Length: 409
Image (tube, rainbow, N blue to C red):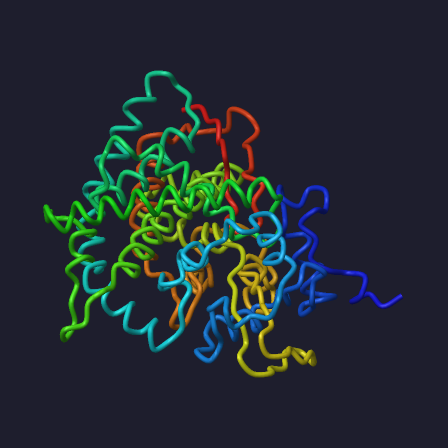
């Protein structure tokens, strides 16, 4: 039997969500490049993933892809409800466009979402972490997701954008539903829920943007509305799509980053002890957490011309999913200890968890600041931290994280 033909990406395999890395290892060995019955091509080796994410000639625009079963399912579920306006939702976000539009938009957004603005949030992140740990400390136990990993990045990005405080729970619910649409496999009920959440989110952010136009404030959203570069400004659709992207990306993946890294530390007591002995190693722990159990497992590209990868001819318009999680554990790049968790790994920062090339994650610096503060503070204040029960995975393919992480102090 052809081994390569018998091995393919299968998110329905028992135990996959608990540990997808065993499957990734088999795929790297037997089918590192293959076309799935789901439609897209999948890549699992570091050299192939790095090549694709850094290639400026590959596209991220959905209109450049050929027909996919997933897209046809969306059409079948929603039917006539998919108006032209609905089709355009999110189309002007920098995550979904190619140069030269991507270059222009990234330049405008980067004028306000600066490293300086991010670093200035570090004291605020510290105050938020301390307040939440104070609130649960007396109880001696907590769910580290709902009590810390979730509220920290939500509060930070909400304050940076200037989102009304009383609406954050609703915004979080909509964004969590929308983030789930990144998965290549979706049940019909999730498609409908995402369509409705997208509409609500769009209406809400449109109203907030209009308010910022009339009553400017000292926040990132106001700055985006007024961002200008040699007379160039963001259109209404560009402001809307990129505010929604910044809000969702600004917290969804960071929740996973903090949860996944803390879990890895607690499952490797010698590494947790090492960090507690020197909390200054928090930056290294965060980078190794990003590598070891990436909060984003896959990223997409679409080839505009035929390309060849490992002897496979991939035709133009093909949807290619590069597995960041598999790349980050590839022994061919990381060595024989690729599956080990080591917060002092010298090259940990070379992971691809933030993508690469022109589409490198715009919010990488903010995610690092928040995770460093959260994990460093836990090591300082809670050296006796331990698991209180089995954690609960979120059962997602692309945005891998935890729904619950019960701990005792």
